[in-house]
Image (tube, rainbow, N blue to C red; front, top):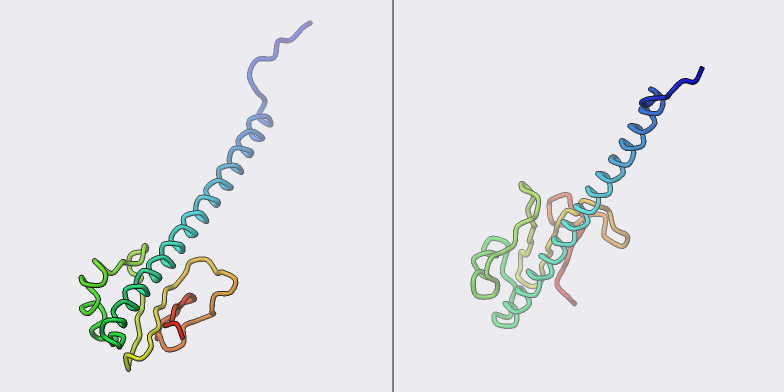
Amino acid sequence: MKRNKQGFTLIEILVAVSIIALLTVMGVTNFMVANKKARDGKRQGDLEQIRAALEIYRADERIYPTTGNFVSEIEPTYMGDIPDDPVTGRDYKYLSTTGASYILCASLELSSAGVPAGCSGCGTACNYKISNPL
């Protein structure tokens, strides 16, 4: 007697589902890492834009704005709008008490080689900072 095989066995279906699930998990993980890298790149770019506006402000005023009047001093003359962190609820931190120097801080989602472990003086947990050039 000859038997015709029709359909798939349970083992074949389980193997196919397992492979699809594994590929889906790998794809979602890679997508999440790519999103974090993109947000970190935006943070770094935003801080560089703020730094450029601060340097132009200092060239005009011979002093950096102090922490309390930072936004009102550089908006809109030196920078249209201060960019916001791409994640809601997070902020960029600016610290300048004397106007002679400043620190800009952000919290990156992925750790990067060569990035300081924390911003001293920012009063917040961050792992990326820009200070005025010496």
